Length: 65
Image 1 (tube, rainbow, N blue to C red):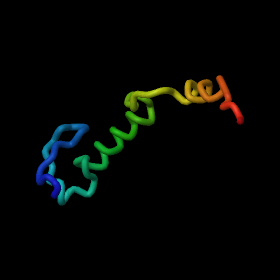
Image 2 (image 1 turned 45 degrees about the horizontal axis):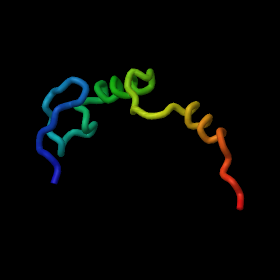
Image 3 (image 1 turned 90 degrees about the vertical axis):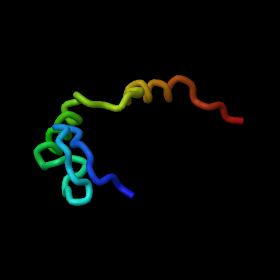
């Protein structure tokens, strides 16, 4: 069961979950603002960078038996 009313993560405006075509956003504009934040790296998921992951895998190859 989904909630009836939620807040847009960008502008915090209350929206009806069931009738919003842009959910969880209230509009195309808010959706694009959020996407721009990810593309410009203003938002990110914490973790190792790709460079760190590559260097970790090159350190020691597994030994063959």
